[in-house]
Image (cartoon, rainbow, N blue to C red; front, side):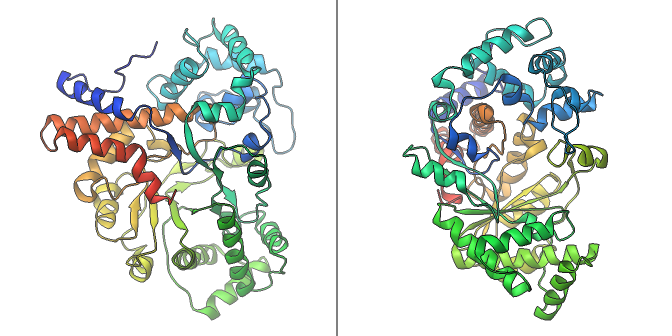
Length: 466
């Protein structure tokens, strides 16, 4: 079903070059420096329950499309926060998936799923209303076999390292279990303190209390809070972590005076913080986290430009990460100037910037990465993790920043079986881009070969200190 030249330019010269480049990188190990696979999956190594729970229920790329067509999330088995009734018959959920699979035509989700079905599960027919139950049974039968256990798939996918995303107060219990099991797969955490920084989010006080328990200290002041975060970073590093991750709507960093931030933190503890307080606190903490990264060497990732939980109805009923996050415009040049003037020239500091605002690629981000030693550009992210989105990213950043101020690819996925397909798409798009440059004699073919290998493996290992 899968054309071996898929995603390559139809021009025969470019296609031939892209094909040759792709064959050099096709079998390279997968380096996965940022994603949302639950480490419990690999710690327990239990069989996946069924195709619907494996492929549909954890993947907001799938059910956001269905919801946009008026299909209730309850009918897809998405758990409700209040424990309310949702569809429990996994076969019915899969049948609805098959009946509506055509909705993904032309989308990256379709690209990933078709490759996943064929190459991971050996499915040789298209998914639709008529074939849905046959395919469900075929996948279900495969999932009962030892070679489809999570660790076996990790090894089959040729994953070199898999990095998870974990809250600052996380015990990292499942990471410990993986290490103690003797299994050779490398799975390491990422320090993500957003729950402890977003002072207006429900559950902030609970996270602060949990942070205190995890460090054995009561957090009654901003000084206590910073020391607890620094201690947790040291704990994460001791388990193999090399990165932190921070999600913001606006990438704004600015320092407050010690008196101002002490007073603001006290207001937050009393539940009296305002929207302005929340914005200023996040801006100040980005400066603090940059300082910490200079001190301890952890790579700092900043994901900006997502208006989280835009749909209040869905958030209140189903919680976060349900496909209702929407991109917004961002400004980096002025907003990050204070941080970059203070830390952007530090030899030991690395800041990887991601955005959902493509308009900033050539105007702000490429010039920024093309100057500051600390700044690298994360790959096309989320809505732009696609054939066209990846191509736009390369076209808009390469002339100014080159590829060596970017960090290769990361799959950013919760859907574990889709990892190889996502990396394969990225490798094909990069090879097609480089093949185009070689066909136009911007670069020579031997240069394109070296660049293809760097984009597939070397840049990501260096950028994330893996």
